[in-house]
Amino acid sequence: RGIQRGGFGHTNPAWPIRHEDKLYWQGGAGVLYVIDLNKPFSPDALSWVATDPVGASWTFGAPAIDETGIYVRSQRDLVRITP
Image (tube, rainbow, N blue to C red):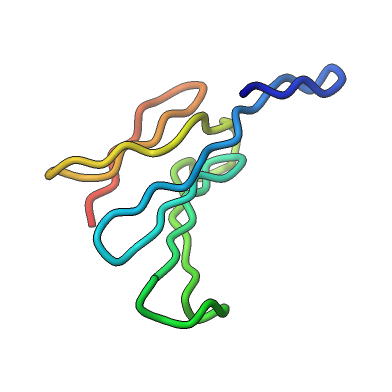
């Protein structure tokens, strides 16, 4: 699942994960996209959470969800997002 592009490094594109009425999709540099499945697919259904304030760390793999939060892994950290 890794992609190699020149000297820039690698990213592991994540598959989205569904939890309750939301789809969580981990994007590039420190971004977790949240898609509200109760709304028609449009800009109103989309939001995002920054997991790295400066976008200096690539995020990897699908987010993990348990009863305490959503977990996102990056090059430097494991970030817990509480809903």
